[in-house]
Length: 79
Image (cartoon, rainbow, N blue to C red; front, side, top):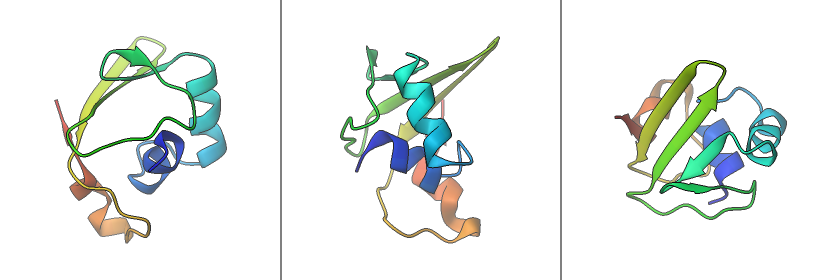
């Protein structure tokens, strides 16, 4: 699954276009490397998001195409 789609499905970022822009600006790292919007994720990958002074680091636990709102946090674990 693409990183921009995962960030939207997991509700870490509200819209896919915002996730795409964050990747293009170099604010998203996957396993320590800068991610492009089309970077493919695998279970166990580590995602680091840098927004202003905040840094969020999560581990991918599950990849699903359609996720209900209450199950979105089951897709990742905050590190």
